[in-house]
Amino acid sequence: MNRSGDRRTIVIFLLTGFIWGSGFLFIRVAVAELSPVEFVFARTALACAVLALVMLVTRRHWPTGFDVWRRIATLGIVGCAVPFLFYAWAGQRIPSGLSSIYNAAVPVATALVTLIAMRQERLGGRKLLAIAVGAIGIVVVLQPWRLDASDFDLGGQLACIGAVLGLGFAFSYTRKAISPLGLDPIGVAMGQMLVCAVVVGGVVPFTSTGVPAVSPAAIGSVLASGVFATGIAYIWNFQIIERWGAASASMVTYVTTLVGVAAGIIVLHEPMAIHHLIGAAIVLIGVGIGVQGSRGTVGLGPAAPG
Image (cartoon, rainbow, N blue to C red; front, side):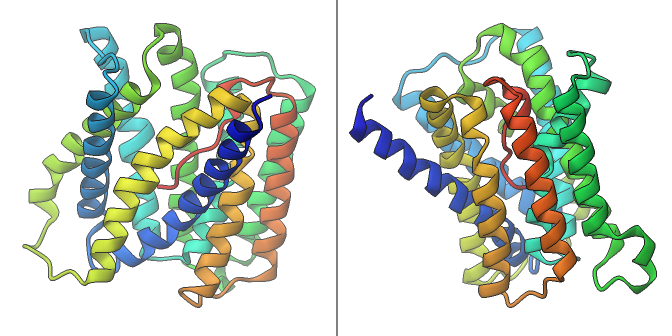
């Protein structure tokens, strides 16, 4: 094994987890001044530009053909625009650290969508256990028996669950409809962001109240979210998968959740209840069970934050 190459992979693995974990903080700061639609449009437009530039510089193959773009469009709308908007809307209502805890359930949601909606695999014992453990963790976080006394907005938490299911669909649909085409993964990510930016951008004129006065902190958050969390980190993640395999790469979920919770508490001084941390630990146990049984498939991979 090339030790220098492996050290480099470890570094970009940790950087990816740090950037994706910080992504929820970026969302929280940005949507304090921008609408969710404006933020998602700016974020995906920037990410599309970064990925397209990489495609040009590295002379990669661009996606072509009606059927290819039909599938990428489905991925861009259901697996990108919908969850990104849900996360941005939730960012106005609940702490960023809580959003990162819900995001940790994406690998479990992917398994659930793959097994039930896509009907791609049989319901094996390990994956059934992973889904069950992850569901228990979500229940502990949400505490539906205490909704009247909840300190956090129920709608925001349900939006996170909707985003998690959307990202679960994205991974499952990618495996079923995109991967067999043998497309360049960066080209797929670029196309996905392009579709999302076009669709969400078409809604901006009907939801915007004019040119907003945005602070440097909000501008920096948009730039960091688009260029780094949605652009460069995607490229790094593909490199990690190529080096270590999808199952090992999906372990970035642990780093992302840890950073997301810590950033919310340290930077934004957000409150965090003990049952949120317990639920997060249970969810991550479910992720670990699922990853062990994934055999390097994409179905239990991580996800960038909304």
